[in-house]
Length: 250
Image (tube, rainbow, N blue to C red; front, side):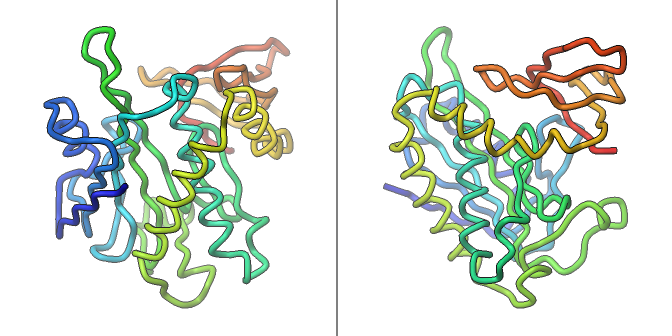
């Protein structure tokens, strides 16, 4: 079902996929991959994805045929699919249990970021046109910029050998397709998501930055709501809900 289009360089696979879907050009199963991105996007416009050309999986997937109960939860479907893919690749290294999901969509290995997910739903008025799943996985990158070198890691660093990017791509796409079919209810999905995030109760404290720059510090994890929003305990002992924010472990 996948129509894979590969580019040597793009400003952003996510931007291309989003724009083509908005124009009605992109269809279900279109996959945009670039060996390098000059303007790779994070969850907020001021965040970029740093990559070495030809070393990582930089991909955006267009889906228009999604079960209604999953349309607003594809960021979680995607994150769990990436999580399962990386664990599968590392299974023979006895390292799969060191791979964790950090709310909302970062995949960590020993606390360092190995993958990030960015999902954007496209609407035409009240009509759902589809969703663009942006996936970045550090695969064979050897060097990271100084600003993120202590926070990022690649599969190469764990395996000690390079692996074909196409292998990771094909594994993820297969797992994604199976994951979408598996979750017949959003309740099942939220249960699995809660289980994957349970480790965050061990974090002594963390901070959150909202899209407008507002920061909250000294927070503790207290679970997620039925729609995936983060529930935290503040320094005053109060409970607060965050729908969308960037989480920083202190």
